[in-house]
Amino acid sequence: MSSPAQAKTPFYITTAISYPNGVPHIGHAYEVIATDAMARFKRLDGYDVFFMTGTDEHGLKMQQTAHKLGLTAKQLADENSSAFQQMSRDLGISHNRFIRTTDADHYAAATAIWQRMEANGDIYLSQYAGWYSVRDERYFVEDETEVHEDGLRYATETGTEVTWTEEESYFFKLASYQDRLLKHYADHPHFGAPHNRFNEVVSFVRGGLEDLSISRTSFDWGVPVPGNPDHVMYVWVDALTNYLTGVGFPDTESESYLKYWPADVHVIGKDISRFHAVYWPAFLMSAQLELPKRVMIHGFLHNNGVKMSKSLGNVVAPADWVAQYGLDQVRFFLLREVPFGADGSYSHDSVVGRMNSDLANNLGNLAQRSLSMVAKNCAAQVPVPQAFTAADQDILAQAGVLLDLCREAYEVQDFHRALEEIWTVLGDTNAYFAEQQPWVLRKTDIERMNTVLYVTLEVLRIVSILVQPVMPDSAAKLLAALGQATAHDDGGGHPFAAIGTPLVAGTPLPAPTPIFPKYEDPADA
Ligand code: ME8
Image 1 (cartoon, rainbow, N blue to C red):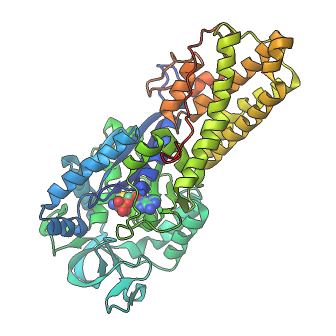
Image 2: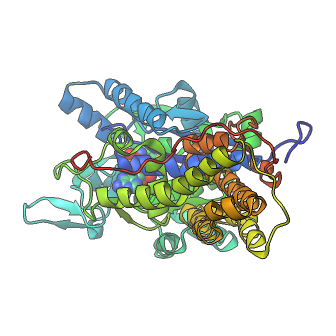
Image 3: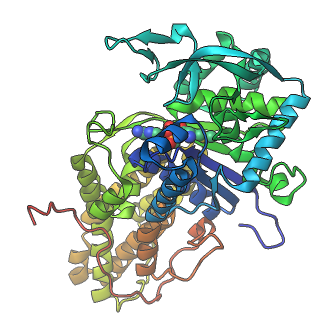
């Protein structure tokens, strides 16, 4: 698509940065896999992608958890940040930077954004009194809380315990940003997605905003407030700024900043939409920096419909899933099963269902059957096709529009729809293969058999290229089985630009081996 002389279009995408007060669970895996698929898609489509993920290491929650474990906050952060980095390796994540908010350059960025907001007249010192949830690292007004039977007070929205907190605090003049935020949302209808989740944010802003307490004095595990080291920054001020740190801020003249900021997409979960679609744009407006183009809010994953919790013992460790089902199977399941944005549920049966029907049957079996026939009957070479019939043309045309359909779907992070479109074509190709009966043609009309096999391999080639963002390893194996192992762009993989170049008859093919095994329960095996 792009020649070396042409600069590629930059694309900057991030995940939320996770709290390393515990080890990662499948919800974290879901977010980073989806973001990875998006990053890979854009790379394969010729973009210059910068993809960042990481850990959010400051705040009272980290300090308290560390204290309970007899560790320093930094020791806890080191230990669990390593676990998150290991998760990224286990999941084949292609990030360009894993940021930690304890990285030295991040302190510089957080300090600089504070100073810019201060210089803009948006920070003042006052007294804070209110209900603080350590779990959510967030304040609530009394109306947003309720007292439960145990006599303790909880945040109504999140169900976490809150404690009365009174201290001197710096405030950010959030209230004065209401109109500017509403105008921004109106002018940029794709700023927040999906609509239903973003509308909640808009309603919240319409309801009026209060100034935000942005520093704490009761603990010291955070970025010091410039000019007043008795205060540390509220963890969300420092956390959100990670997105700037990663691209070179505060050096707004640096090559990476100029290239990648503003971010194209922040991928986050529904519980933190307010921070990303209200506080973050307000901070950036105050600091006179550009706003991210889009905040994509995904839903939550539940175990068999039940919220994951340590006390219920139903928290799934991503590495266990990968060991049980296989990496690409997990990646595929998570993105195919639940429309991104909606809440979803997973169970052993639903994973096995996807593995066996979508992967083993519809894709794996089609590849294995057609490639085995080619190995036996076509001298292990891509067969020579004759003139295409209407049925051939129809299926090739369906495969031919898949790239555009996938582009449309990925543009709005609708991974589920992209995969659905691909699997519709695979379903039709299976029907085509069954109708054409190449195993009968083998005895009656070898040339027609060659054409049917060629058409089938050609659809498989396009499908393999397009599933790379979701299943990079399996797609690479499929492409190798189709004699397509050589083309690689700098992101690793077969660029989408290659979709327009059909299989060349006579290309030698290796002996086929099954790529998507059926799942069998160990007890049944
Ligand atoms: O919120 N299903 O960190 P975090 C899907 N440090 N997604 C889930 C989930 C679930 N069951 N549970 C959590 C934080 N997530 C902050 C972010 S960003 C500047 C700071 C998602 O470790 C959650 O919505 O609690 C968030 O996007 C991400 O995992 C990290 O959550």
